[in-house]
Figure 1: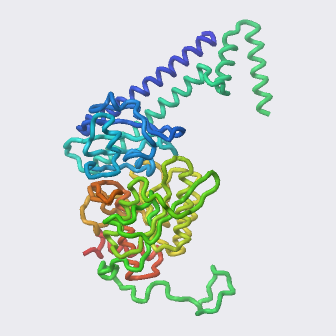
Figure 2: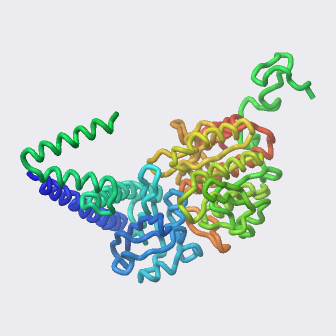
Length: 214
Length: 272
């Protein structure tokens, strides 16, 4: 396999990984909604630079309206969960003045109860999993909270995988002209060479690596 | 007053030894002895959180409100003019007030709308609270930032020796976070009972106590309430009960406080 082909193959796999990550995140909100017999579920991701949260996946009521919607990082119950890193259940939003009603109204669905858990990866908070208006189950509230946290952990893994795959895809496509992108391009060029030219290039790269290691 | 020590503080002339436990420490402890009809009068409790809405019907007035400002490397504690930015601190303050209605409530806000500088803000806010010498500090928060863990551990130890009872919320998530895991704090998780004075000692730490944290009506900014669940709300129950004990028995060390809480827990012999 030539270098370009190899690079293309790897890029293809990585992109497929990113798409699978998106699918997995969507699947998690779908399953969460089903397990909690909820009207809706969603995942909003943190955009640290813009200081915003944006809905990356949603299921159930208001799904189409909510996807892609952005709101300030500190706003609403989701903002509170991002701030504290702690899961939260609030069961009477009608009495809750902090609840970001405007965001809910934008989505076309205003819930009366929410469960939220942060998506944690190492030291970072990646986003928030929200479950709206859960139905009656035979689980006690504490068990509901524990189950929600388990889903949030799974969602964090999926979001992190998807983000890593996307970053890798960007590097393989040479976006941004950064170091890893340059390495990927070099690998592609060397791999595409043949015969003596290829042998010479490999000797050069090996010697360069030895030199830089000193 | 004894003469100032010439020997280093970590040596002892036996002749200068003073009783370590209170003279009236009973052979067995019950809640009547531990806090009886205390209301927290004369005991200061500081809420290190998202700020507190002063004047909320369930919170009442605050003795002081401060906020940590982070501007790059510059971290300062300034008077707070924003109140509660998330609702979390007000909820915790309301619970402390419900347990210890006459305690002196203070607030220092360490949470803000931006993600950056949170670890530094937490350390600065906690350091400020410990240095103020508040009797009880409620910390319904934790951080996963490993670079501040050492500073927090040092602060928790400083609080322990300064007789500042640091009551910290265990994280509900299966992640490493601080300072609740430190042995020098009183760490709290939730149980699903509905009695605010029911708390259990945990035989299998690091979480040391479980208090009410499920389906409880908490104060929420705007003067209202919300029905809420989380370890964050269990912690101020223990902070409030600690304030009650300190009114009855001023000057207890956190070690003695922990012992009293263990012995008067609902799953121990001292429970009613």
